[in-house]
Image 1 (tube, rainbow, N blue to C red):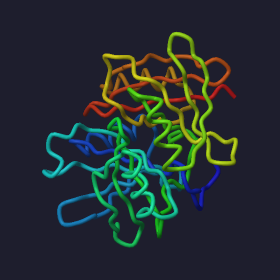
Image 2: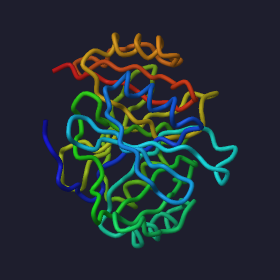
Image 3: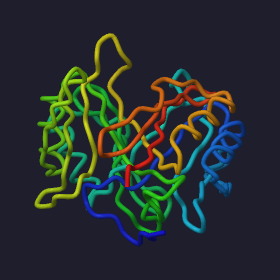
Image 4: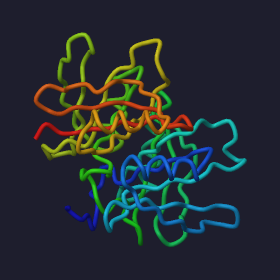
Length: 259
């Protein structure tokens, strides 16, 4: 296991589930991904549950309050940035919106919640005491983040402008063009982007979790009352993935690399 002590500007560093039933969600993901759960008070009426892979924090979940009534359960993707306030201004300047203006999260970091021009939500994070995930890519941990969008060209312009990412397009035939986002000056992939085939879900960022066996984990998820949205599918020479909806309705993906 590689333990992360820091995350670079413009990289995905945390995944967070907002759900209607935290107790049920903890049981589901602990059974599916092997998480150990640590509940932490986060205010008078809120518990923030930190999810561990081995000894490291990998993600978190919480039960939505009255202020989020009507919002469907969802996984949020966090992008680490050097300066939340500065990047928040770039979001607005390039056609995005701020759902929550930059604010301090106790002494652990500073964040903002934003949407891109098509409405896909993401979070910005500047770390203080909490860097985000201490483990990535190992079984049970976040391993990939993928934008599903109705306007890939506009999304590419937005994300390259806000985060300095570069793009790398791959023709996937009937599925359309799959775009890889890379950090500026780097060859390492940060995230992916694919077009939504209409009619389809609204634009969103999809979180992928690593597993040792995609088929077995997808089957287990269904036994735990998840809904299979995309059956285990090969990405030639890269890996195998499946997309599911947990029992409360949040969508996520499972992934096993080919190597």
